[in-house]
Length: 319
Figure: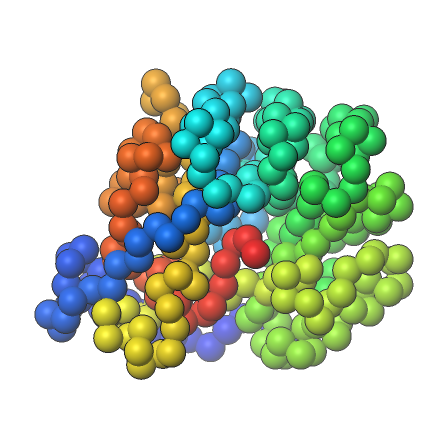
């Protein structure tokens, strides 16, 4: 089975240049913040492995996004409480979040304030190094408000390892089994187009892996097993105009930036910044301010990921 996809047309360089109008001169769609329900925290771009197609280019050497501190995250949690923002969940992504030694403190702060917490992890050694802290959080707050979403690109070990590194599937699966045995709430993230067999076959393959390893994940549940579309900003994709909402039968409120923002700290920066979403960590056009209040303005859908991943792909990083 090949993991390679058919060649796709290259992106027209005239597209996604003007935040107000498309290359054809039509009014570009923008998405207003209907209510901040998920706050994402990028704990830093460093990762214990280097994947072939990581959209954020995480690696053991990429520190373009520095480690956030628990105190910096607490300031945003304070803002949420002070302004009574409707945040339900705080998600942690990277890089590998468990490389940030302050992650357990951040998680405890989120949980004690009554929010749900979600951690995106490869479930490898960095996570296992925090086993005692994770068990303490589960004991203090119970198993239902902390979710660990483990990255398995494919249910076939060889294809997963081809993307991540040799032997990584076995290590990640061992981490997933440990989480299941210890009673943590677990989800899995895969890649929808990886392997080219189609979504139904992908879900069936994952279901076999889950059953064989006593992992309580429903492979038919699109939240418990999220299959994300590929993100290649160099491939052609239509621009999204205001008219597209009616044509596609979609609401702007269904798009991720209607309900989410992400906090990052750029290398060398004095303070963190708030971005429109998790997918565009390096594009300064999507940096909205230093506070959640400043970042509440509408977001023009002026990037290929906005079209392919969110509007046409129907994906979201949280529920």
